[in-house]
Length: 223
Image (cartoon, rainbow, N blue to C red; front, side, top):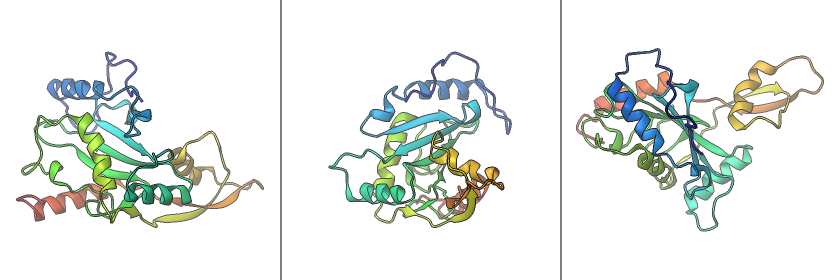
């Protein structure tokens, strides 16, 4: 779906560092390239801004309505999600002031997954995101977002990590997967309607960043 119903309104500036006008203009341009019908497109994804911050994109790939001719790896991901009452995989793209000269930091936030290009803490280590060997400043982010799903689905090792915890919750059918699980720990109480449930623990950005930095240092000449 379109993540920017009013693209001309003033966007919130990030709190963790200066972002210059050139980078903001480029990000605004890139965000406008996201199709309004991306959720119902063959790629089945959405892009939203986290806390209305133009430098933080939340990308969700949906697996509850895959076509019959999708590949076996995509079907396996869909099956794993369905077993846990989930419908999508979420990634986050975090841009710095040096974008587009440097790539965004990309990590799998929810549910936690592991694969050939995904570390166990969610860092995406792929040639296209290597700042010195692979990343191109001319990269169109709408195309990268579509390609990211292909990277995930072409990885025969991609799977959900069993990083969960058990808590008592009250089901809320109005919430989506992430909202339901992310808020359940705060909704525990003494109500007799509470039921025990196992929820996934989202990946932490700080941990994923440290892992990403480690792999970049270890593969300074490219992955």
